[in-house]
Length: 499
Image 1 (tube, rainbow, N blue to C red):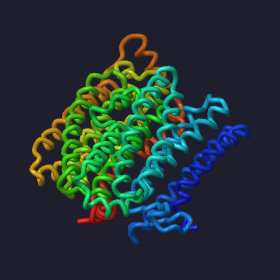
Image 2: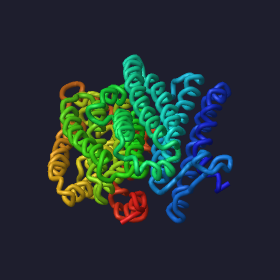
Image 3: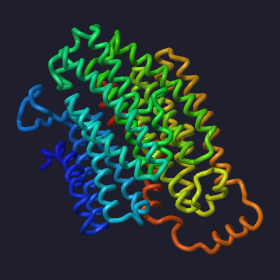
Image 4: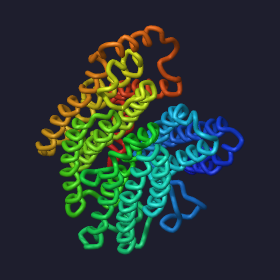
């Protein structure tokens, strides 16, 4: 059984997704428990895979016994294994949280929701572990199509947001496929390891240059890299909260992983077109950090602030990839982990505030911390991490990015990172001021105070509160354990396998 873990990692959520609509006819509770069991099993598979690859090196799982490049293989190295653990864990937390959101849904709607959620998970995991550039496109489309439908389930405005995402996302997928076509034309292979060998003499040919540009453009759209982010604000804002959490926490990170994989491991980030592409990625990433932060300051709704913040945060990853040295890449990869945890936590907090108060506008949720003390404490931890205050996780990824930029002599990136921390502080402290400090007045304030004093029981249903608290604690744990995470996992995910 252990030898089949890479296949089971994909098959378990995929087959459960196919069965979910049928199970929903029997019981809404049954389909939910089955989906949770499938994702929990995927978490254990991912942890088992990561444990093995850290001790034994890259795991090559070959389907049907066919040797690559003729056969299809999953090639799981420490980078892919760590990302698989992150995907399964965050999605598992989001699925637990989704119970309250789906409370009033019909059994049929529950079956469709859980099926699409599991398909999204299977697609993201497939993109992570596949060793074939075309299969990566297949998994990309599986995750994208199911995500479009999940976003649309959020209501009328969400339908429009999903349609926009579908149009723009299809353009992104087409660009990636075009790039794959050019690479196949010049190398005659789709296997990543085989392509990495055959492409070296061809790096400066027009076909490879076009391929690099197409792949970066396609994945740049998918990761909402400025100025290709047009789909992101509405999709994040109007999607159901658990879907907003995985879009921001995971969906926009996997395309960044694809760029990292293709440019550093397959094509090779030396001099020439790859280095030029990385320079462009860094410049627009830095612009995206500033633009996203300023736009977040201008917003009035909780989730929309977080949406523009996500656009800014993906810029940190782009800057780290562009810096390209050990510290820069550690900062980029560590920020993928940090942002997945802290932003998923923040979106869940926003959903909890909406569930408790009926409001997203930050001027309408004054002193909500009295109603939701544990929830808002988790918000504080995640918000401080976004700003970059020690000992939270966000401080350490930004610290490594600054070290990398200093070592590379890229001072503008240091200025952008420091300035963005100040901008982050502006919009998060606006939320903190309203939710903790500002007081309502008059009869409304008296009625609310009486409600708080007479309230009994938990502030939220356990299925909402537990994921928020786990992710909030995770922000602190990752920050305190940053050295161990970097030395025992992330350094082995770098090109060359470590320092």
